[in-house]
Length: 189
Image 1 (cartoon, helix red, strand yellow):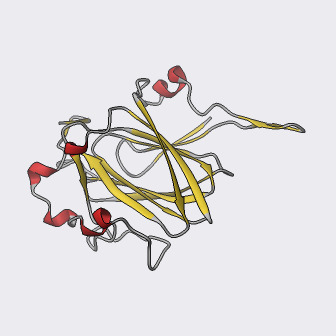
Image 2: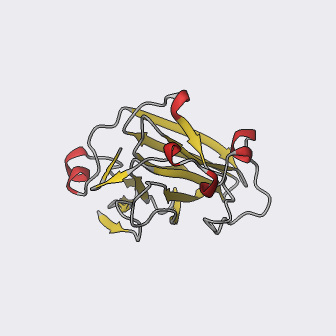
């Protein structure tokens, strides 16, 4: 497996080994001991699967009191996946990383607790699977506006399909500090 650190502290991109022969291919999408070596928690408690059509943007989402780390990959199609460091006090606060995840490249991205996450579908449709380190808790759900000018995310879509909730989230600069996760010695508080 090839593991790459990004410019954002704690954000990791993984490219699994793929075994191909005349029958098709095989790969491990998660192996607790190996992933733990790279700082990815072995305890995931919830798997989410979403199907979205071309031009859909989902995000930028996070949970405050019950933060979720996410291991994200694509089962079908192609997405532009985005992680934004919103951990107040982090050296990379307010910066984002975008990566193409697809059913052809099998890349995964580990998004640690304290990051906002979103993606844009580039193919006709995409099925995205993500493992979460904590459960979804509706009362803890928060979000940042997908087109926040201070983040300057280079989304590859001009007129995205959005949920009403995603359309109305505030910009990061408009968020009260008590609505953002805290960064302290590599941990979210």
